[in-house]
Image 1 (tube, one colour):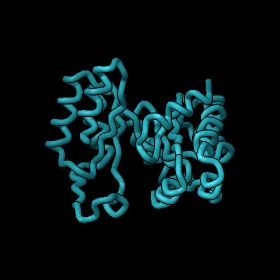
Image 2 (cartoon, helix red, strand yellow):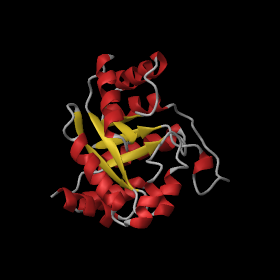
Image 3 (cartoon, helix red, strand yellow):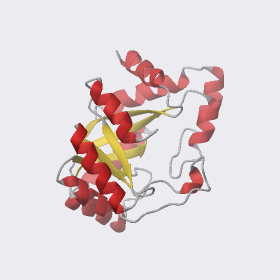
Image 4 (cartoon, helix red, strand yellow):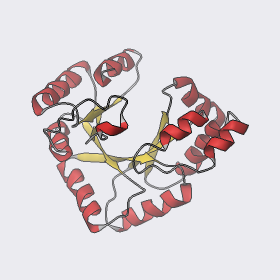
Amino acid sequence: MSPWAAAAVALAEDLEPIVHVSCRDRNRLALQSDLLGGRLIGVRNVLCLRGDEIEVTDQPEARAVRDLDVVDLIESAAGEFCVLAAADPAADLSHELVARLRTKIAAGARLLETQPVFDLSAFAGWLRRLRETGIGVPVLVDVSIVATSVEAELLGRIPFVTSPPDLPARLERDPDAGIALAAELVEGLLGLEGVAGCHLSPIGGEPAVALSVLERLG
């Protein structure tokens, strides 16, 4: 569904949404219209994204638009929203990647939201190296919740995301293994300096799965 429609539902329930806005599907006129409409209904936060390639979606016959670059989108949104920008802990912190992150921050991004994280130790090392480059903005960490072996296989299709290779087998043995893994990750991630929070992201889209993680965390 439209993320703005979902945001309106969340706002009606006194929740504060972070709306994902992608360059892939809309031209600059539509994106500007969306941002104005979002501000009108009370949205305060947006995550500005380039958008996955069409090939990884369930509608490969669609066409990408990409009229704006994500930096242009960040600049458009920064005056009215708290803007988040994407960062990939699986990617090497090359000079080019660090420069790209700096450009996003200079354009108005106030937080970085990561791709899904499954390895606490590897992420902690990435975060330390990120800070050594001088980038000090808070980080919101995506924690994907994998509830079934089918979802584990689906996760493997997402570019640059590496989940534990034995996760499908673990889920076959224990249906709650994905929930336990997510809770363990959240507990460790929140202990890292500079981590502002975690985005619990159920692969199957079922809210009850995310609530199960929160219940396990107490």
